[in-house]
Image (cartoon, rainbow, N blue to C red; front, side, top):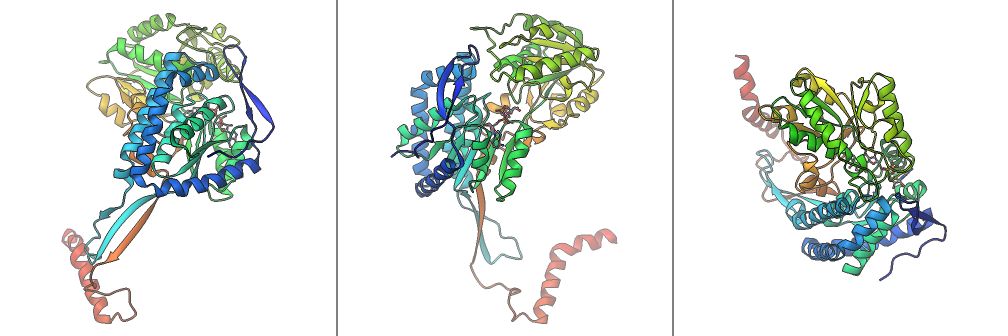
Amino acid sequence: MTTVAPTTATFDSLDPATGEVVGTHPIHDADHVNAVVERARIEASWWESLGFKGRKERLVRWQKYVVQHLDELVELVQRENGKPAGDAALEITLAIDHLHWAAGHAEKVLKRRSVAPGLIMANQAASVAYRPLGVVAVIGPWNYPVFTPMGSIAYALAAGNAVVFKPSEHTPGIGEWLARSFLEAIGRPVLQVVTGFGETGGALCAAGVGKVAFTGSPGTARRVMAACAETLTPVLMEAGGKDAMIVDEDADLDAAAEAAIWGAAANAGQTCAGVERVYVHERVYDDFLRQLTDQAKGLAAEPGGQLGPITMPSQIDIIRRHIDDAIARGGRAVVGGPESVGERYVQPTVLVDVPDDSTAITEETFGPTVTVTKVRDMDEAVAKANSTTYALGSTVFGKARAQEIAERLRAGMTSINAVIAFAGVPSLPFGGIGESGFGRIHGPDGLKEFTYAHAITRQRFKPALAMTTFGRTEKDEQRAGKLVNALYGRGNKKKKA
Ligand code: NAD
């Protein structure tokens, strides 16, 4: 079984470390995108007809295929995205774990289940099932080119949908690899790929799919939403972040510093839920900063280093602007600084004394930089952490009050005494609010995101009070009034008395 034939215009994906061409890919136009979506509708019917067990068996087959070809995919991620092999392997491993969870839990979460009909409707048997939307379009970014789109792809497939995936123009080969591996493992193109730039993504939004799952920047999220509004196509939005870490006075400072620098600089800082701001209790600020500084100085962004290059060249200017803005407004770089920003690589940079209105605090930097701010208490830490238009992930290091602080954070996810742990737990939902988007991938919420609820009632016996009939009498209405009063009115009367 083959996929739809590609169009002729092409573009190259480049190795961000060297600028060398990694692969050449078609720029798919609207006609091609529509043809792919048409084909996906056929695949969606077949895929749905397999039922939960048939789909699970096939998704596990695909999962095994990916594990068996892990090295191939690691190498491709390394070349197209630039991250070190260990980071690529970690990202793929987590994606495989999610695929396994989604395949294994879809039936339990989505299958038809009985619900209590309530006293007034006690003559009805009531049930609800979560059914696939048909074709789901997934539009992905380049920073976690496997893990991030798989958060939508795996869950949408497990929920019974066919998927058309438009990978970032920076990582199209990885998207093609995923679709090809699915075809080789399963034999039918239930997962297809279209490649190209924003126009290709726009065509996918206009193609009449059941839902668009978008991951990318808030600006593009707005354009995607506007395009989808034309056809009332529902959207899931996973946009950027400006995540904060809070360090309380009783925190393990060594562990907190290690987590802060990893959260800030891993993947060269190009992580939507990476640590970009740290708020530290004044009693431990100096000790924490010393440990963070020591650890950050031991890292290097270079070929073969712990940090890879900046994948998207245009991001270099944004990182430079944020560092310059922080320093121009009175901030200081205690590690790195403006000179850390090279042509392809950015060295880790730790900024202190940065005012709250600096872009280094207010906007997503997406580089290996972090601001560290002293706070007098945890109320101030929570207020500062929450004072952003973004709200994706967050981290708390502490002991006695850590849980309480976590519960006060305005964020989709929080890790206590670890960093980004929430992303690796398949049973937990992942997503944000505000500028960080809406809707959830992962966990039961992530499965339901790619379905619609179908409610059914079945009358088991005639109701004692037949209200939905023109044969209803005045006496019936009086009895209904008495029933409502007996069920729900008495408490109020008592309270008044
Ligand atoms: P981007 O917004 O530039 O692009 C994302 C995708 O949208 C790409 O595939 C692109 O081709 C496509 N696109 C561009 N214009 C389009 C249009 N008009 N219609 C449809 N599609 C269009 O984002 P990026 O630079 O690839 O990714 C980085 C961003 O993604 C960061 O802001 C990061 O925080 C965010 N991100 C968020 C999450 C999350 O789960 N919340 C995960 C990873 C990345």
